[in-house]
Image 1: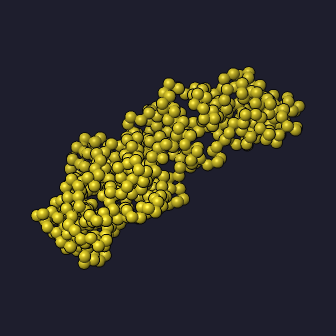
Image 2 (image 1 turned 90 degrees about the vertical axis):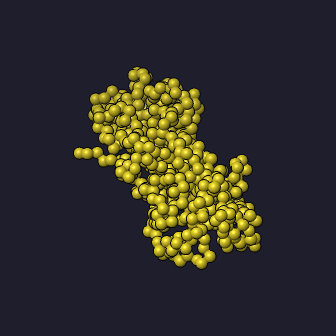
Length: 536
């Protein structure tokens, strides 16, 4: 049976049939927190770029920040004072925190830092700089000259009527600073200027070089030709019938005389039960925040493992542990050179890797347990890690994992994933049955006799109580004054006794890992005390 080819390699193979040289592009408007949903576009583009390089292509990867787009409204996360800036280019709006050059940079800076953590390093373009440097001047001239042809394309493809005073260019008003309230009244191609009037009452003349921007449906195909973009992922909204990609195809061909890029259409990432993520509605988990919770390679894996055209459901609560588990199992199989690991899964792992990132070998879920057993104290954590059989030399990687787990427990962990080791024998042990208390006493004796035990050994020792001729069963029976074969032992009850004695609750993390995390003198003392505490 032939292995399935990964979607990124399919894209690379298809586009290489057209040319061996490619420019992969992605772009996002930094109007708010750049979130996990946005990350799908960038990781998808990076995967296609990597696949092209792997196949020997001459490929480049760029990211375009649409910093010259206008502020559309006062978003839920902004103060009402921003109402006066609605309609201004994002690059000209003040920074919300006052520490960045402008509004756009406030949201762009943490996003670009997050990209580095994800092993993504595109060449970055800022639209405001592109317009102000004159890169768009010739495209603006062409659009203004061919205004009627573009309007016809928009009407034919989108089915919407274009207003008589519509223009493909939005001048920037020198009085109010907005680009959404101006109307073009004339232009001079030789002088490279555009006359306008604004709803604020001002009339003026703007330079084509930085004095405004093309409307989105014209800007996008113009950009394809200006930069030479050949491959670009974008959301399904742009790909809808009559949408901006459909109009872009015709504008690129008929107005700008160049080919549109090969499309990679992707579906949304849904946030739990809240639906598609959106900066404007506040339904987001930012990439920066998520990188404080999970290793970057796990976030890449979230996207790499799923075809772009299929939606992804992302829940940072308990389901996140399942996602991390899946990734860690794949990573371990790859590193152990598992002969049963197919080429498709191997490729998923390769494309999920974030180069230069140190990562601990300790399973995330196990560190969730270790962190709580050690009460968050790093020195205690190192002792538990060592006792659990892991190396502790790479303290940087361990500390990073500890920070991830600490943040996850604080922000996203469901209540049942949290626990607290009681300083003294919990009052709840009074509810334990005679059988459970007899078990704890016998269990303490055997732990003391056998010395250091692995997590698996602890687990097997508890389960041995199901066997009449086991040493544990014999000790329990002797304490209760019955024959071993007369005992009916349910291991679930025994594990409940363990959790109750240590946590004061009848459930907890995986028992083997849990028990091996403690120093044996603590377990012996605690179980003996619990076995004689409270009414019989």
